[in-house]
Picture 1 (tube, rainbow, N blue to C red):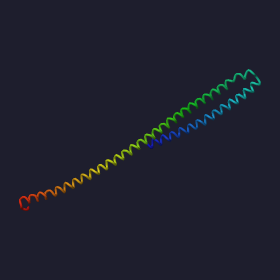
Picture 2 (picture 1 turned 180 degrees about the horizontal axis):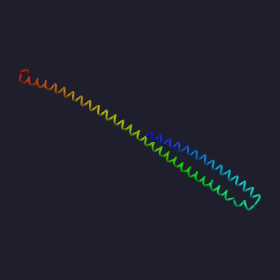
Picture 3 (picture 1 turned 180 degrees about the vertical axis):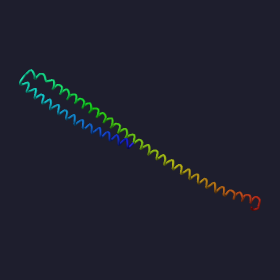
Length: 159
């Protein structure tokens, strides 16, 4: 159980670290996208001042680049949501494992108490048996003497 718990904690830590790295990548990607959009807007603004027709339609290279950035951003978001769901599942598994460990510890405590009770009962029975054996041996040893005395008393002679 402890090994499973340690493995789960280690996997959780790795997942959290990957999540942090993905968040950093996502922020970097967003900043690059914003800077590219700002640069494109500045370039479009300059083109718009020289020719009115080209400002209304961005170039195909800009569209492809923007499309690539949007696709990358969506992929990172999907990966982030996947990592977050994996983290939630890992936390739930950790809670279940901890609950299982606590239940098993409670069971072990209860079994130890039962074992102690059984040992006490066994000791009591052993003591009672010893007392009976001693009593029986004493009775057997005394009985022939009593019988002999009774026989001697009835016949009047001593053996």
